[in-house]
Image 1 (tube, rainbow, N blue to C red):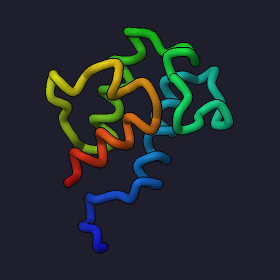
Image 2 (image 1 turned 90 degrees about the horizontal axis):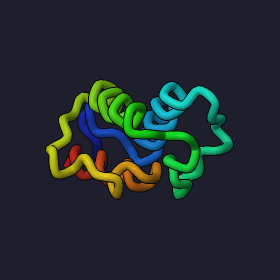
Image 3 (image 1 turned 60 degrees about the vertical axis):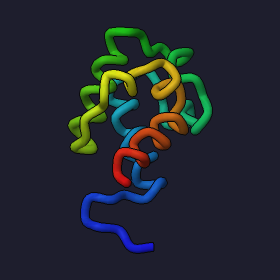
Length: 89
């Protein structure tokens, strides 16, 4: 499978999401960020959730539809990888 310049692999998407999360949640370490950990249990609240969404938009150069901004799409790294991957295709 070939990728265009702005298509990232799942691992690259995961790494960028983790970097954004570490920036939004400075008290969280990389070892806390497994793919299926509920990031809201790590201290994400509604205020920094909006920062997370904004930073993901900036980092990936994408827009989220209003219907995509839901707890289910941003609860885990795995959920965010799935959402962002779908925005690339």
